[in-house]
Image 1 (cartoon, rainbow, N blue to C red):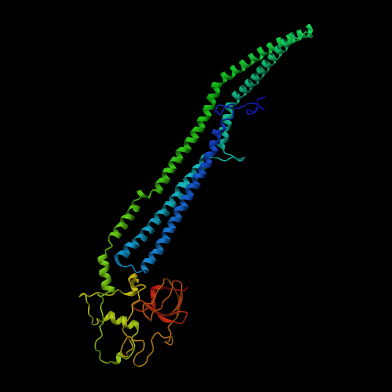
Image 2: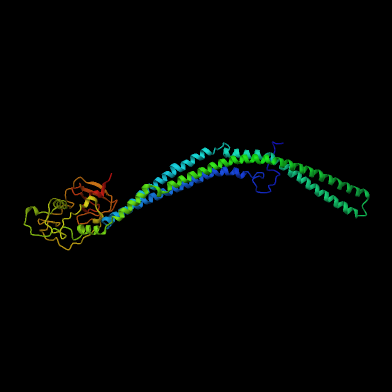
Length: 446
């Protein structure tokens, strides 16, 4: 009899109480929900880690792009350095966000994954061992009480049916007394029916009260057993809740960069770099290097010499300026050295185009493209080439003078001569143009 017992058959759930038959299933379901919530939390952390990584990549790309734009732009001096400090800040913050991404995935994500694996044990037939144990525990605790409840429901049903039958029999007897056509024998049968109905009511009522009393007696034990299983489920859930709280605090620590010393240092350093911007210093630099403060080789009488009977190459001119102090007038009264163009290719000298109003048509000008004897420009294509090498431009470069090449990053050209002492190379574009370019603006094509 007990083997075929089903606690869900024939029992009508009258309320939503935990104590009703079968309502323990919500507590059991909470165990499965705990496993799913672990997955949800891992997915949540994983998505946040992807956001951190994406943000770090965007910061790096932004910093790289704008650093190049600022360095190649017209801004100069201390304000340029202050502006570039923002790009340095972005690169450092990018590194911190990559560290956040690593902490989220390598620590928090893995911690949840390992805890879930230890807390929930899958069965061969599906589901989790913890869920099965809770389900079996509640079933076992509820089964005796549910069986008695089923007997109470059956006894109540029988009692109510007997009461109904008794009322019907009494009604028939009453109506028969007013019927003259009814013989005494029929009346006697109706009276006997009433008597039997009353006896059935008494019997079913006694049985109903007895079964109800037995149910009441079994209730304390039922509640104790159910409480015991429920507390086991509560303990399991408490572990999960406490673990989630612990993990969320760890995530908070990893996300909160305001408590990271290096993060604070980044912005202290940024503020210092911005505050070092000095308009007066920048104006002084520009005056000395790009304005009236520059030295000038003013024209003066020169005797004819066989050495001047040829055109000096750009490299020879630069050597002369490096090794010989030419007569010049500095209107500011102080000696200022002009920065070497190839050293860092400062943004102060990029994209500059200076108009010239003087003419170099006279044959005695040593810087003209053709000397007095008609010698051609030393950079013409008929000059015997050295070992030629194909190179690729790393950056954009705009030629500042007629004998310089202009190209864009990614363009390919031919290096005709190796780098000189001033860092310049002679090369040829694919369109045939020959000229000079900064050696550190290209790389050999492998």
